[in-house]
Amino acid sequence: MHESLLVFRKRFYLWVALLLVAVSVAAYWYHDPQEPPNGGTLLGYTLGTVGALLIVWLAWFGVRKRSYASTLGTVQGWLSAHIYLGLALIVVVLLHAGFQFGWNVHTLAFVIMTLVIISGVFGVIVYLRYPERMSRNRGGAPRSELIDELEDIDRRSLRVAESLGADFHEFVASGVQRTQLGPTLWKRFRGRDSSQILLRQGGETVITANAGQEAALDWLAEQQSMSGDAETVSAISELSALIGNKRKLLRQLGADLKLQATLEIWLYVHVPLTVALLGALLVHIVTVFLYW
Ligand code: HEM
Ligand code: HEM
Image 1 (cartoon, rainbow, N blue to C red):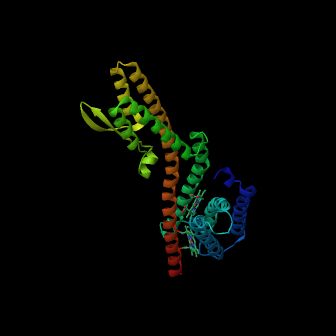
Image 2: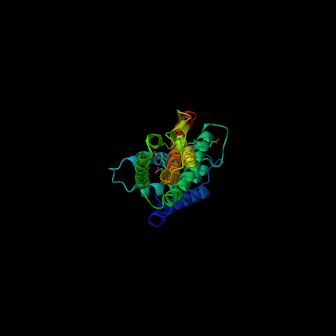
Image 3: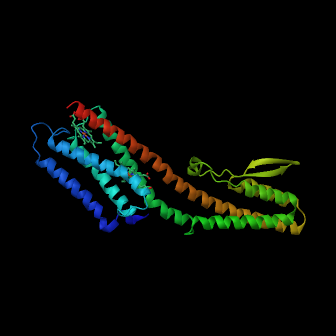
C-alpha cells in the first residue's frame, strides 16, 4: 500500500467525491425551504439519507477488506474511494444539518463522525509514510531476512562460546533463549526490548535485563579484561563483535515491529469509533422519527 492509493485510476474517486460535494452545495444553494435550512426539510432528509448510506458503506469496508473471495473491485480501489468519500461526508452532513447544532444526540453523532474522519486522516498518513520507512529501516530486506540473519549470528555465537567453555556457553545460550522484543502490542509500540540473560556473578547465576544486549556486552568486556591468554581474548572479541551485530539487528527489528504496532493500534481507534458512530446515528434517526 503506497501513494498509488491516493492517485488510484487518476484520482477517479477524488472526482466522484468532488462531484458529490458540488451537487450537494448546488442543491443547498437552490433549495428554498419555508424555514431555515435544517435536517427536517426535503433537502435535509435527502442529504441525511445520503450521509447515512455513506456511513454504512464506509463501515462496510471492514467486512470488504476481509472477504478475499469477493470480485467487487480491488481493496485498493475501495480504500481510495473510502478516503475521498469519507472526507466528502463532512460537507454532506453539514449541509444536511443546515449548519445548526444543539447540545443533543444529533450533534453527538456529528462529533463522533468527525472523530472517525480525523482518525482516518491520521491512518492515511501512517499508511503512506510507514511502508517507505519500514523498507528504509530494513534496507529493503524483508523481515524474515533480518530474522534469518539473527539466527545465523546466534548459531555462530554459540559455536565461539563453546570453544570458551561451559560458562560462556551457558551465558550465550541463555541470551539467545531470552531475547525478546515486546511480547505485547503496547511494548512493541513503545519499542521495548525485554531481553534478559543469565549472568554468573560471584558464583551465583542472576537473571539480568539485557535490553540492547547491554548487559551481555558489559559482561564480555569484564571477562576480557580479566583474561590473560591471547587466544581467549581473541575469542571473546569475536563474541563481542557478533553480539554487537545482534544488537544492531535487534534495533532494526524493534523499529520494524514498532511501525507495525502503530498501524494495529490505529485500527483500535478507527474501528470502535465507527461502531460508536453507527450507534449514535441509529439513535439520531430513531429520535427524529419519534418526535416527528
Ligand atoms: C436517514 C438519515 C437521516 C435522517 C432521516 C436525519 C434526520 C434529521 C432531522 C429530521 C433533523 C432535524 C432535527 C431537528 O431540527 O430537531 C436532523 C438534524 C441533524 N442531523 Fe440528521 N438525519 C439523518 C442522517 C444524519 C447523519 C448521517 C448525521 C451525521 C452523523 C446527522 C446529523 C445531524 C445533525 C448534527 C443535525 C442537527 C441537530 C441540531 O439542529 O441540533 N444526520 N437530522
Ligand atoms: C465516517 C467515516 C468513516 C467510517 C465509518 C470508516 C470506517 C472504517 C472501517 C470500518 C474500516 C475497516 C477497518 C478494519 O476493520 O480493518 C476503515 C479502514 C480505513 N479507514 Fe476509515 N472510515 C471512515 C472515514 C475515513 C476517512 C475520512 C479516512 C481517511 C481520510 C479513512 C481511512 C481509513 C484507512 C486508511 C483504512 C484502512 C485500514 C486498512 O486497510 O487496514 N477512513 N474505515
